[in-house]
Length: 202
Image 1 (cartoon, one colour):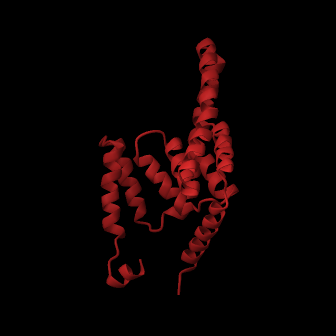
Image 2 (image 1 turned 90 degrees about the horizontal axis):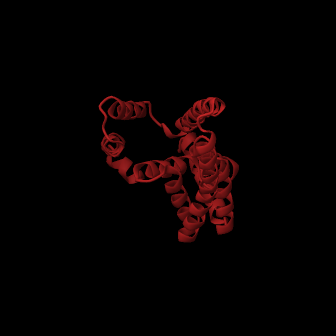
Image 3 (image 1 turned 90 degrees about the vertical axis):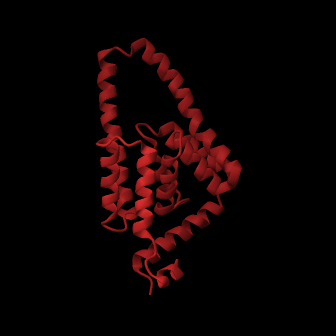
């Protein structure tokens, strides 16, 4: 008999697949345009809010997997994630619509902000505001980490992988790709099927 958590995850995946099959290219563009225009302080919380919570195009497991791939590749996480999600939902057309949607608002806003910062960046009120926004963005990212960890960390031993990554990057100064590859190899060894019957189930 299947475990309740496994059954629930399977139902979430089926719902996400059904919703994803009905989405149009124009809707993908519109959703990523909103994400690109409103994702102040870090795009990951907004991506999860729009793609998993508001419209269940992805379940949490798929979101974490695509986010992991995005972080493993060169380039901005947001654009990598947009390409992967657009491709998953509607093929190459979906990928183009997603990347245009998420990049256009940010490009226009940064142009305006760059002009304003050049003129008033040294003002004391501007400095104070930027410090507050930086702290709030850390809080947003931390909130998303807590929400995702509840569903993506299946075993207590997964916490060891988190600790190893933090130590490797912050204390031993491994590059991010090296740390991800090393932890990925350890995760494969730890999570591999250990018995023939488990291999058959997978």
